[in-house]
Image 1: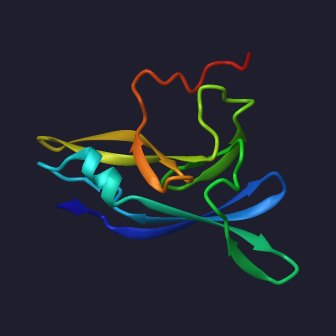
Image 2: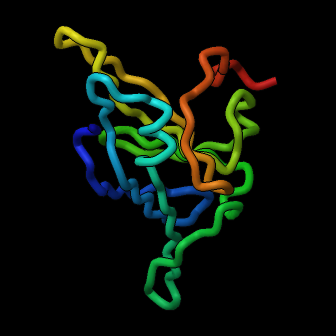
Amino acid sequence: MWWKKEKKKNLVESLGELLLVERHGSTFVAKHCSVEDMLKNEVKFKVYKLDGVRKQWVEMKGSDLDDRILFVGEDCCFSVSTRDFPGCQGNCIYFSYEVWCGKNVISSRIGVFHLDVGRASPLEASANIFLPPP
């Protein structure tokens, strides 16, 4: 059982384009649930780009972000390049979620949604995403 199923939207500027990031699914893994199952089955993202000429949102395809990375938090969203964050994979959304650890203890974690395959996974513990650029 997952809690806090929701649909949340964030606006973010990326390379001069206005993007709408839509998150579907759970943001919380409840007691006795698998983090991997929640990420695999529950978390989905869609990214739209504003077409200013036609005045409508156009859904971006899996590879449209190229080397860009989107970070989506509970109350913020921003875009960076893999050139500035070499430990991160491009064309992905890094996001936060919470895990019940027992006795009123909740742990915040980071997941990675791969836009090209449409699937999320936990951030590898060995990932050094905040190393200085080469």
